[in-house]
Length: 331
Image (cartoon, rainbow, N blue to C red):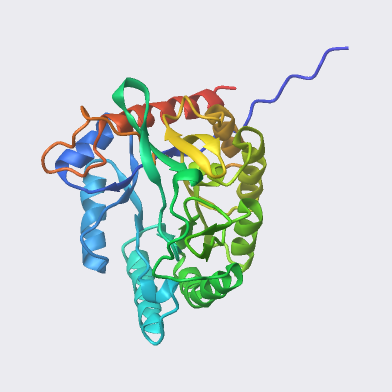
């Protein structure tokens, strides 16, 4: 009896993207040269007219400006009333401006304690790897946030989301939250809301029921919260992909895991990035895969008049992402 023919996978609509680069001619030429036609842009301000101008500049070069990053003031993350309500109102206004300018979404971080690292370590070819080694980390000195429990962190998050997501839904703007980097039980007195990583992300996603509430899902950061990223990561990615909670992907790799890791080149870490791309294809993820923390090196300066992200390292990662998308779409 003949075996039934294997059905081809549905081709992925996902595409390479970029973040934090402006819309100057030099920066846009860098993107187009390397096959990047979708972006999260660095903008001068968040007024509608400014966003429309940046979007038009990108479009003229053949690039779709889909998202921008916004920062959350400390009044929101540290629950500093009454300023908190004023600043949440300002976020709601940015959402309305983004919708008026034709953007798809906003990337943001809800960090009570910001990005934490120890001293960088050397990598291949003279490159430098951003590193976190808990044994060398000063975990005794409290941050300006003081001691914050996980429950208190989630109370602050809920206060923000319950105000902001209805506005996002009314304006059809996706709100994509980046997980705290790195996940850990307690750092400088702050219990990280995204630790344990899978449980924390689930709880965050369930605070508000809306298709406009989800993640700027960082493969590296999620891996940093796992004992064995090479086996544990893909289930988490698939879960949130099936829930349609992935609005943007930071496509980066690490070596190591919980409490001790290096941010390495995408082809040398503990994640199988081909399997990551396969998983995203299978859950029909349709948006950007973008480089995040690329290793730096002394021969990789930014050209005059361009963002510090216009670099050799990003060019390598653009090509790597494009090739993986082609590979998973070829079977």
